[in-house]
Length: 210
Image (cartoon, rainbow, N blue to C red; front, top):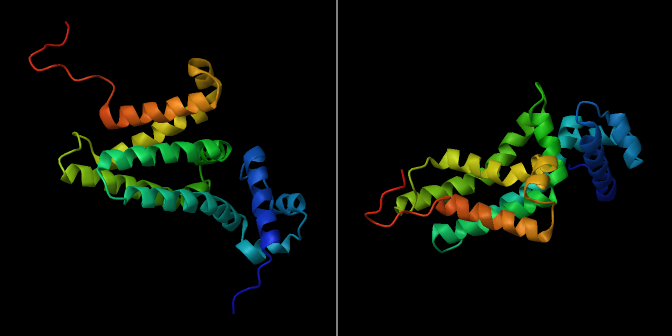
């Protein structure tokens, strides 16, 4: 028989965990601190999530399930791979911006030896990466993909979209602070670079300058 669930209480625990994981880090956050922040009984963390790791998993799942579903739907639409990839890239860019604080926390944890975030986040990242890889493989079958390996291309795309937010103290100086205009330029430039490269092709018969 399923356990009865008090959804508002469960949601408060997830929200409290997110707040504290972002500010203190996963290892430095105790379940007692989460329960206090959520104004809940400590035993409810074990009841609903099993452990602090289970609470982390549920916190991340809500974000990755949403973007994974969105990317899968966009990647499987009819139409040429180029148009679908452009839509997917813009969508992921928007989602990254919406969750930029969570992204910074995850990267901090992923660089920490022994952090459970690695095990929890890898399957979730795959559900976003796999539709992109499938899209690139579809483009390769159509003869529309350049000489790149789809799995590596998917990883490099993620880095391209995340770096502005991860290195914001520097990137905000280099290209300007976060604004609707800056984010739109970021999205459009990522699409242009990923789909077409940086350099314009030389006209037939023209040699590159020495």
